[in-house]
Amino acid sequence: MLAMLFDRVGEPLREATVETPRPGPGQVLLAVRACAVCRTDLHVIDGDLTRPKLPLILGHEIVGAVEAVGDGVDTSFKPGERVGVPWLGWTCGACDYCTSGRENLCDQARFTGYDLDGGYAEYAVADARYCFPIPEGYADVQAAPLLCAGLIGYRSYRMTGDAERLGIYGFGGAAHIITQVARHQGRRIFAFTKPGDVEGQDFARELGAEWAGGSDETPPEDLDAAIIFAPVGSLLPTALRCTRKGGTVVCGGIHMSEIPAFPYELLWGERAVRSVANLTRRDGEEFFRVAPQAGVRTEIQSYPLESANRALDDLRDGNVRGAAVLVIDVHP
Ligand SMILES: [Zn+2]
Ligand SMILES: [Zn+2]
Image (tube, rainbow, N blue to C red):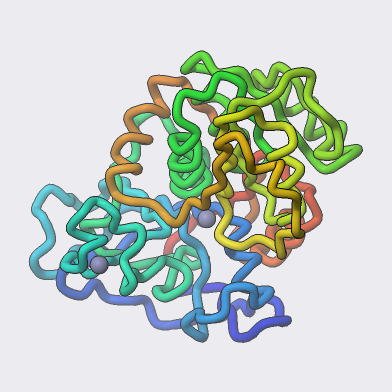
């Protein structure tokens, strides 16, 4: 099969023909139809995340059709059925995180497109227990960004509690999905982009943000909570400054540049700061119920699999409106 391989930091992905994987016990083999490109993929390529399997097939927002199943797979998986594969690929199931509803924190967890080969390829295998059925009504390319931008975005959103005035820093894949969910639930959205990114601000307003501006601007009202999706540590004190007493600032990305020192006064007043790590299967089940109810639509820019490097460059340069998605049309 054709795959885009990551060999080492600093090199572009390499187009290669590799052996098509076979499904082991508990796994499904999927013909990949679409795989979204996540900022986490850039963090792997750049060496910010330091322990990838090598060589590696990136991609953890996979939509594919079941091609074959391994031994012991639940019989509800039928050939041709469409499923999604997220970042969380495997957990131990036995540690106290796993047994207390926090499998996202399992020390032995394995992640798709990092510890396990992912979806920048014509085929992928995945543990069937961690796959999600994809709601009807979403085309493959539209569904792909739901699997990380949607899911981890949703987990970040849930951590903001019942905040009415919600700030979102970094208006990319996750923000454009979560804005729609939040609007559906009656929240008011204040969107922050890179200073001067007028297009990004227009995009945010189109999706229902009541105010959009640069991250260096002060919103017209204090925020009840904020989510930071941009990997920029200096946004943390910025967001705290705009958040009222008792509010939470959630860091939704897997990597962030260093957070500068800031006066205690910004945290005082029972403000809270927290990160969100990975996802649980429960987040996925909940999100895939909520997304169609909220009428979530994803905005995508599609690329052929072979153009994965171009998709990554566009994401890095801020030239993607919504989410970048690799499309695999033909399977040999
Ligand atoms: Zn991701
Ligand atoms: Zn565990």
